[in-house]
Length: 171
Image (cartoon, rainbow, N blue to C red; front, side, top):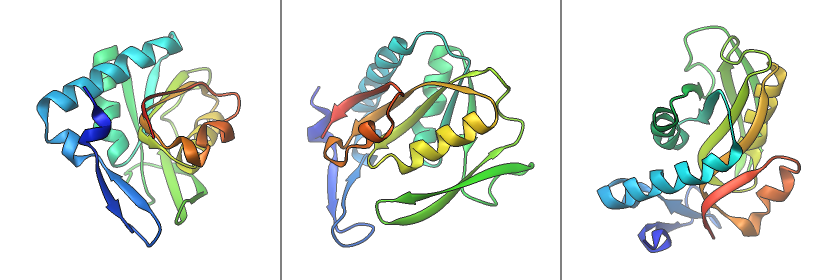
């Protein structure tokens, strides 16, 4: 299946100069969604054993929860400030179009836990790097990063250095 053909490109969103890749067209297509999840699961098997999946809101949840289910693992949400009900730790980071902050429950990752980070897209790596910093601050070990789409021209993989990155579609 050609997933690239399924994505909708929205120019100048959320600001001028950004070519937003809309995955809702994949989510609406049962076959494309199933294919995406199966390919992500196959790809993430390359990371070996891990204990838990961590993913950011909102689109990371779309893939993180079913992949956790498919792998028989737990899931930890990473959210914007004020969205998690328990005590949190936070990390501020840069995006392609501004800054943001992410939070995780302070007891979500146990020291020594092996963590797989899942998201829909890897661009400049700001979100992914912040999740890695949160996990490591809590004593977790990041085994890798699994994404559906990688915008390779933004060189996010290079910025992640030692971390293994797997993507299903490279743009």
